[in-house]
Each structure stands twice: as structure tokens, then as C-alpha cells.
Image (tube, rainbow, N blue to C red):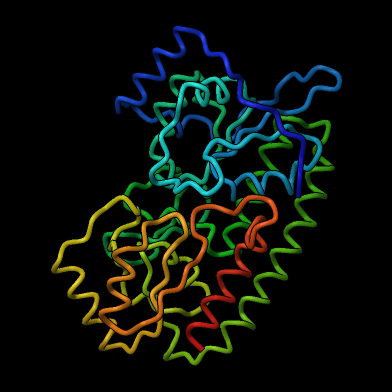
Amino acid sequence: MKTSEWSFRPVVSVALFCVALVILSGCSSASPLTEMPFPAPVDLAPGEKLRVVATTSIVRDVAANVGRDLIDLALLIPTGTDPHSFEPIPQDVAAVADAHVLLANGVGLEGFLEPLLESAGASRRVVELSTGIRLLDAGENRDQPAEGEPHHPDMDPHTWTDPNNVMVWVENTERTLSTLDPRNAEAYRANAQAYRAQLDELDRWVRDQVARIPVEQRLLVTDHLVFGYLARQYGFTQVGAIIPAYTSLAQPSAKELAELEEAIRDAGVKAVFVGHTVNPNLADTVARDTGTQLVLLYTGSLTENGGDADTYLDYVRYNVSAIVAALK
């Protein structure tokens, strides 16, 4: 789904540029994200569209399906970039400052976001789409309710790997756009309903595909802990990850890698799955050591237009097809 897009402003004031340099140096401040989950309506001039910034290409695709040509939509993290490693530049500060709202995944995925929002003066114009999803807990490996708190540093941020969670994203996006732009609320509602129907069909398709894998072979080993929500929803077991963390930026110890290889052999794992945006060297080594297949998937980003996964629907279909082919 395509929408008209507005470009990031190429010129940034000296003051804003200096603020951006503070961001890039790693300074941070108290979180502004809990103050207002849904921004107040904006006063749009005749013919003016909502200016929306999406953090990731997956967030953008959801926003495009709900907003369609009623919004001007920009992307913050470039397509093909690992969201865990993204660092904003001064033009990003200007773009966020110019937006009516910024839509984010949340749950700590966008670690750069809080100081960026403060610098852009946009602390009350951000919505974390994962709000309301039942999150996976890192510390005790169990489910925990979100309870309305948008920032969970010990929770799994990869909520989009389950299409049922993206249905929550759609609801939050519809509510956000309708609140900001009530004159088009009915259109946003209709767009959201149509997209939810596609996601519901996608969920049924995933279940049919996963059913082709014997239960004892539904074993996932990934580059980092990225498919927890997919595993929970569709009955996979996460044997482990090359990087036993929710971020691809961590580094495993030699002991952790040895334990993972032992677990792979003991469980009879068939494949190691690694994201296109992650360095595959460690995963390739583990696959060779254990005699398993190395399979590339898409994780934190869609592809450019015309690629294998240039929409969220295609992203899920590509990944599930690759997983089923490797494990059945």
C-alpha cells in the first residue's frame, strides 16, 4: 500500500543541529513516552494532510494501510537497517519536529527514541503501537501483561512477528489517526477494518502452513531472540539463539555458543535462522559445527519495493514459507 510521502527537511537550524549532536553523543533524559498515549486533535488547514513519521518500515506499512492517501507518511529508520543499531542524524530531529505524530513499535526497540523526541519537542506526539499487547518477559521467560506501560526494558520488543499482534497495531493506528484527524475518522476505520481482514486471513494461512511441520520438529534457533511471539502463537519451541538477548548488538560468550551447539545436537535441530540485517558469521559457524542448514529470514525490516518482503503480508509469508521448508 503506497501513500504520498513528505521528505525530511534538508536544512536544520544551528540550535537544532547542536541538540542532535548531544543525542549522538549518547546523552539521555527521563522518558516522555508515558505522558500521552494518544495525541490531541490537530487543526489542519483545508487540504492539509496529517504528517506521520513511522520508525520502522513495518510500522510504516501498517500506517500506510490505515491512512492510505489521507496522510503524508515518512520513514525514520531506512529500509534494510537493523533497528537495534540505528542512530539518528540531525535531519531526523527536524523530521520528527515537523510531524503531527510519530508511530513507533515501542517496548524498547527504538532505544534512540526518547532523547530524539525530547530534542524535537515531540514528547507528546508519539504512539507506541505495541501498547496493549501481552508481552513476553525476558527475566523469567513467561508472559506478562503490558498494563498500559509502554516501555519495558526486560520485555521482548519483536511483537510484529505475530500477525495477531499487528492487529493491535492496526487498532492503535486507527485510534491515533482518527483522534488527530476526526474529519476522516470513518475512512480510517474502514481502511483498518479491511486490513484487519487481510491479517486474519494471513493468520489462518500461517496456521495451515505450520501444521505441515511435525510438532517435534518445530524447533527454532535464531541469530537473536526475535521470534518469541511467532513461537508462542503457532506452537514453535525456541531452542536458543546465537545471541541470547533481545538485541542483535550483544555478543555471546564462547561458553554460550558451546552450550547452544550442544542443545542443537541434542534436540535434533534442522536449521539456524538468521536475519538479513544481521552479520551471519557466528550463525554460519554454528551451522557448520552442528551440520544444520543456515536459512536467511527478514526480521526487523521489510525490503525495498519489488523485493521478496516489501509489505508486512509478504514479509510473514516469506518467513513462514522459509521456516516450513527448512523444518518439515
